[in-house]
Length: 377
Ligand SMILES: CC(=O)SCCNC(=O)CCNC(=O)[C@H](O)C(C)(C)COP(=O)(O)OP(=O)(O)OC[C@H]1O[C@@H](n2cnc3c(N)ncnc32)[C@H](O)[C@@H]1OP(=O)(O)O
Image (cartoon, rainbow, N blue to C red):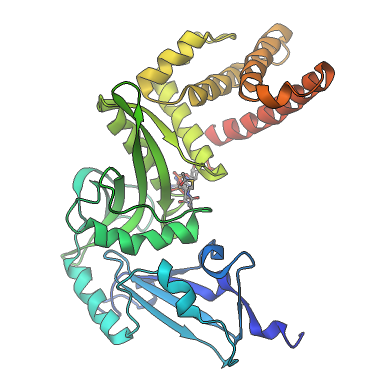
């Protein structure tokens, strides 16, 4: 190995996040069963674009969290260290909970206490159960909070580092602005006559003024923690937002800030299921009139663009490509929207180039729609 290379560590691999459900032996289980470990996905905000740490051999950085209260403990280990090594805690401290400790014995006592005593904060707005293996004793509970909610501001200071580690481009939100709304998802576990809570995920939303007297709720950060991903919790959390917004008069529509591909898929799939169940796609034939899109957007509090996408997906789902007239009508529907959205850039091209570019874009959108429809089937 190159002599210098052995002193370079990939920061994403070095950081080891541990959710500690209960201290060893506290409920008769194995220690291993009560600790879930995973690495972050992004550490560039903390350690820089290269995600590298210099000056340590075999470095490991442990961030341990009580799985409900998120009380936390920092520790690190290495085989060797250069005198010029990067200062790890200094680099990390602004991103970690302000009350993180480094005394492991004290942390174990806190976990023991919080396992028995920690309760979610905010207003409980719903619960559900899932049928998957291992979740027999679990109920999933949704809570609504803002920064005025007792205990929530302190809790959010512990929670927010997960947004940095798992959402690309995330930054801390202004936690003195009581307009932020936060929805929290907890797992309540009933075992051996004891009830305990684990954090599953959360979502932050901000109400922007919508002329003249409503708000546009913008989802800012949406996160399901890794141990709970791919089990339907993201969909449940997202659906709970709809139900809430649809019943609130002041909410005009729900938008999303910089959705990534995973979130866009989750949104498309859930919007499609929801609108299909509501019978929105009955008697579907292109061209779909603008007024119909606007009316659906208004009823279901979705953006016009998102509703137009859903109509296009539904058209493609029903489409018989051998029917040339039907396929052409679909193509025109999509191209018309794409043209409107990209008019400025397209208008800089000459006519032939413009037609070609629009067709290329259409083909890639169509391909992506096929991918989404396959996820729905
Ligand atoms: C605005 C923003 O914040 S954008 C950033 C979004 N957040 C992130 O990227 C952070 C990291 N990732 C996450 O938090 C999550 O992975 C999310 C939010 C993207 C998705 O949440 P999840 O809970 O994993 O979603 P959910 O489980 O509902 O659906 C994901 C997949 O699991 C599948 N799934 C659902 N239930 C089950 C189940 N019981 N067993 C197996 N698979 C399941 C779904 O079908 C779906 O698969 P598909 O995409 O192939 O159709």
